[in-house]
Image 1 (cartoon, rainbow, N blue to C red):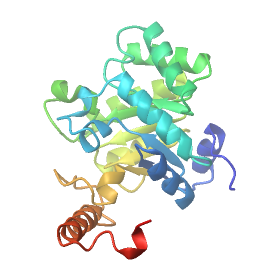
Image 2: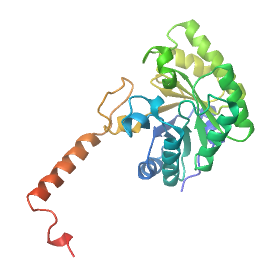
Image 3: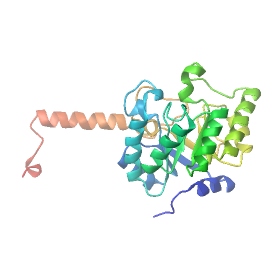
Image 4: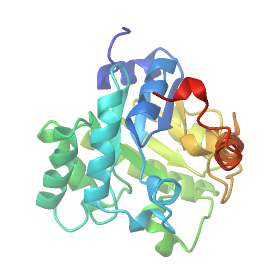
Length: 266
């Protein structure tokens, strides 16, 4: 088995100018396949709200649901670094609640947590979490939990002024102790500017080619989520069609008396 990915290894990737990969997983065996494929970070994304639970947006998922998926994913991973996306309002009401909820995910098998934003309050949360030994991944640019405040799915950091504002937040997060930062839906020039200004790795989620890593939702990669396809997501397979075709063949075989056959009975 390859060496376990740690916070120090992730930071070393940037120092060595070595790209690394991040994909989401929500169940044990998807996580196992990602791990065996060499994915460096497996993220239990709050995107599961839509792609696994059918909710309208990520704000609908709660801490109890994220706990269940964290337990499942952690069971499937040996090498990759496992990160849980902390859901909406799980770290916003107080620093004490943030420590309790994030600590719960670590107990359930996560190696770290991801939280969104760069306000002074979030900085305080990060400082407390890292002080008690909980690794934190930051998330700036388009932050889905602030969807209503941002006014929709809008590209962030489009001007130099806007990019500098995100960079200031990123610097504060870096100082507070995050080991990496997701930059979502940003022009790649802005993301490069921010990436080059930090000593910790950045992870592109629709932020172009110049970040230190790339993250996608696995259901987009596998072609399993049909509702919409982000511009930045690349489809590597068509699992939706595979599942449909397999289910239809089974249905036909049952109704035509072809399943089970003689080799499938006792």
